[in-house]
Image 1 (cartoon, chains in turn purple, red):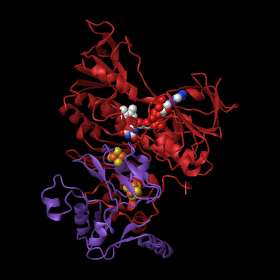
Image 2 (cartoon, chains in turn green, blue; image 1 turned 90 degrees about the vertical axis):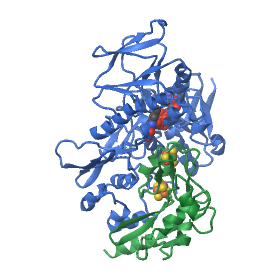
Image 3 (cartoon, protein in one colour; image 1 turned 180 degrees about the horizontal axis):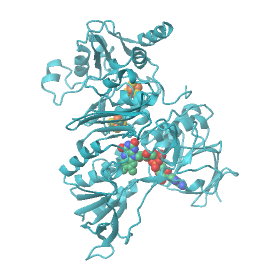
Image 4 (cartoon, protein in one colour; image 1 turned 45 degrees about the vertical axis):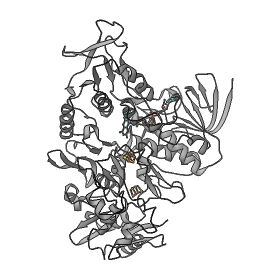
Length: 161
Length: 436
Ligand SMILES: Cc1cc2nc3c(=O)[nH]c(=O)nc-3n(C[C@H](O)[C@H](O)[C@H](O)COP(=O)(O)OP(=O)(O)OC[C@H]3O[C@@H](n4cnc5c(N)ncnc54)[C@H](O)[C@@H]3O)c2cc1C
Ligand code: SF4
Ligand code: SF4
């Protein structure tokens, strides 16, 4: 399946992916309204991870065997057998946040205001997820490539050691 | 007597049973499959009986799977019927109704039964357990006339019940035998924070005491009127909730060759000592990666994942249980708590505890030989998953252990190879050698 991968070499931690994720998941889909009018504000589903000069954004990996789905107390989290996309059914979710502890990437964001778990849904209403489309440095790619960046780097690192 | 045959028979229509049924159907679409439960309901989420009791969710609102689940998965539900005997030689389960079910592979996902401490005068109207949907359904009408409740047990189930009662404007006193609430899953700092929240919500918390006697109401001798504690203290109540916990329901294997400790003992394939009988969930002792042995770890995710592993193996696909441990995410009375594994380091033996407490923000990890053996996070639980993931995989965190408690902790804090692995698709899977 197509997933979002990040390139830490070019990420400058500008945070625009977070901004556009928030907007894409807002009511109005309008950047000003999403920030000024919609309260509580939607959390971003992608988070820039940063340490010193290293930075890269992270969102859900849509795992083949998702810990979050298997840990969900209510059945709100499901992996679509066709598309492979892992989503939260907000109606069913009770905000117990068991999934937050279960995900090894901390890719599920607890929305304490709404008492709901939120996560990347790969923007089903858009052709390209908003984070990818709006990164000014092309630090995010959306691909089902046989050698997605992340995996390739792992292979190289492993070989180089 | 009527006799039916199934390739797969699952006893238990909850986390473990559903996990297994879904895995079986991924591996085998055809083989006949039945799920048996003495509860008459569509599969529901047990932890949500509290929301149901509080009137926040309807019965359909706590369904664990869609209403057409059984048809969709080609599963025969046999609900409201109890298995009373297991015959291994005949590969047969006998029901209370007299019916008999034969099977080729059997899963015991029987869960637990409530622990009820002995109390003088017990047996009056107004005394409830809090484990099943039926418990919640019986409680509901009884609460209409009630003003005060005593909840025995300040653990997860007790606090869950208390929260529902408080929402219904009942005055609650928790009586906890240990010195503090949640004492089985968190340390004293976390207990103190939770107790403060309880008190703020008007809940009285009595610790270090037990209920010795249940006394009848003055005007209705058949009903609960109050309790007497072991120190002689009397507390008036119309509702007495027993929420001490559960013990594994292992009655079916009693008298068979299947090995049982406190729970039904299973290997890393979730198989019991009988190769075609599997067990999982609250009924089973399965591998705990913190202790390195099979133990009771009665939480929902472990039941589901154990069930999934059992299901694959039952359908002939090798799958290995990665292990589970006591892991919980609680949000009672608005206080987010994430905890897993040990909460205090055992004396000596190279354990180390790192912690940071500031108001209601708390972070703690317990290390053993560089590996995480326990964690607790209060308020800010957003990165608990990264830490729990490291714990589950047994990663040596010595080189970055200080970062674990920092405000800035993220995947960027991890060593490069590990970080790259998290970003790729090569996440350690809950089921190795599984499904695909
Ligand atoms: C109030 C409450 C709150 C909880 N909160 C949490 C939480 O926040 N997080 C968490 O992780 N866990 C929580 N738990 C624990 C969680 O619900 C259990 O770990 C989980 O339900 C175990 O699933 P299981 O499939 O092993 O068994 P169960 O859910 O106990 O289901 C077993 C089923 O098998 C049936 N059965 C047993 N024997 C027979 C028989 N002989 N014949 C027919 N049917 C039989 C039982 O009636 C039952 O329906 C909570 C539990 C309670 C009660
Ligand atoms: S939320 Fe976490 S565990 Fe779930 S699919 Fe995404 S990355 Fe995997
Ligand atoms: S927070 Fe919602 S999605 Fe996450 S485990 Fe709880 S019910 Fe499921």
